[in-house]
Amino acid sequence: MKHNATEQEVLEILNDSGKSDSAKIETLESMRDGRRAEMRAATESPMVADDDVGDDLKIIDRALAKLQAGTVSIEDNGAATL
Image: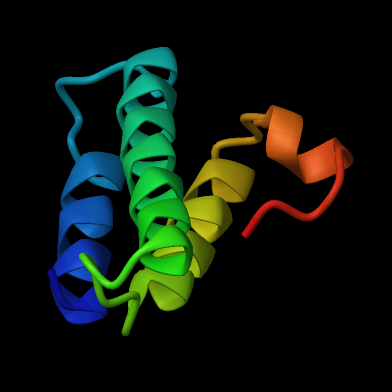
């Protein structure tokens, strides 16, 4: 998925008035976990190209910060794994 598509998906989540902030955070965290897994796979094998994954993560992290999610991953505080 190109990062433009991710940006559009994130905007749709943020602008969804039918979802609570906690539901939006849960959805964004799930997206973030998926992108991080994709990035790990790309560094471990040639099966996935990580062309825009870093950009996707930045978009998702900014959206989580906007919602004041305070999202913390084990990878954020540990040794570099990507």
